[in-house]
Length: 444
View 1: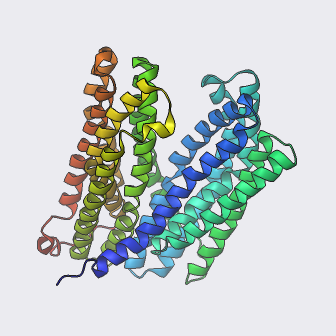
View 2: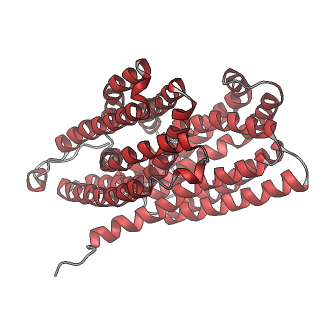
View 3: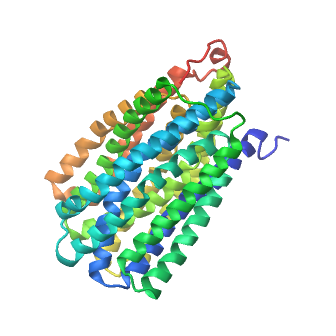
């Protein structure tokens, strides 16, 4: 009898489960942070909301440091190139520090202007400005943690990032309670608590990285920096295109009406939580494919890719059916408005049904990251917007399409991503792993 979990399954889940833990901790922390500041009144809460919007945008676009570093480390480990691993990691930390200083200046100077454009004024704007100017001190350390996470993941280690994220976020919560309520520093206390936690996290990641390096530090060449920055541009464009689709869906819902916006927001938050769950499989997909290609084994990369996709479809079926089954009940957690709940139920049913598309898209993202196919990721995300646009525009023009039109547009977007990413993946590694074994890999 075939075992329920093969050795490959255990390897994949061994990385995916801790990665899922780390992914879930962050949004749970944000909820706690909002709750702490929320008791201070509307001004501090509104200021935090606007500042967080700016900081989240910067965090998403800086995530290329983590993704590109993971791929480079995994590939070079597959090649057994210890010096190359050290050079890649050193370059990642240097870029993280330099870029972090630039981002810090932008957060302190441009950030307040962005919150003003987002509608900040009066007490809300004052609190947003305070939060951003203090948060600027933490930006270099935030980017260092991204580089450190990429290094750990490239070494097939997702447990260390989980432990560090837990330590940093628990420290953050304790500091915020002490500084906000004990020292009565208000929103400034919340910001300083976050900065201290970011400094501690960065120090812990540097410590973990130093232990993992098996050679003395080497000075990276220009090529190391050029590769990282070139890949970073492609990944940043991809991230912006992804954010554009989600932001557009919310904007269209707002144009349709407040009730539709409320229902859409509920479904979108559930979708984001499910996305984090399924996206955890992208981490082992990226790491193991990168390592397999580094040692020139396309046969193994194809095998890993197929199994990650299969596990993703199984997971998506479970979470999708659960979402549809719970759709009449979930909206009660968020609102007492019957009309908003009715819109949310419809959106949640569609949200559950589209989970297989989401799982395949997320896993393929990881597989192509492992193959360092950054240009393909960028093109696919941009082209997928054309699949999103028809129903999105139609809903904007005819509000009767409502929540159904918005979520069917999201479904088309995810389906297009599956098709485009799958085309690139199977071109790189044909489905027939025997055929794939006859070819040799290209370096990331």
